[in-house]
Length: 162
Image (tube, rainbow, N blue to C red; front, side, top):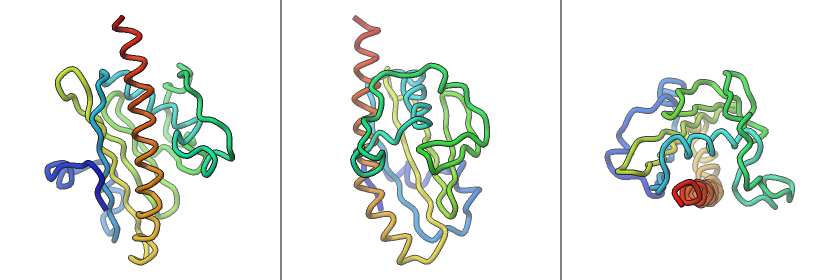
């Protein structure tokens, strides 16, 4: 299951790969964001507070915050993300890798001109039919999440640049 990821991104090695080497289902999603990496990474850290997807479905109807809380950028392994995931590892301005049961995910950043490329890989380590079902649902939710994070990061970058 792919959305927006290039062939090179789909074959790249990400931190989640080492955590779930036998995962049967893999989903890559990627988006270009016209904002510097530090701003995008700071917005990824906000996933500690909310999912930034379809809030009615995955945030009990509460709107994900539209302003960043700087305290959430202070990361430590074991912290909760989106209520379900646990922070496994991170490298500031490079990646955040999360786990929840048999699901492992890496949000990875790289520079693209003056902006950023956000590549997310989700690995489902379980029976393939269940993994595919989860990947389909995840595609809908993750697409919305990435579009929302792009919008917020680009708004912040435009505010700083003006």
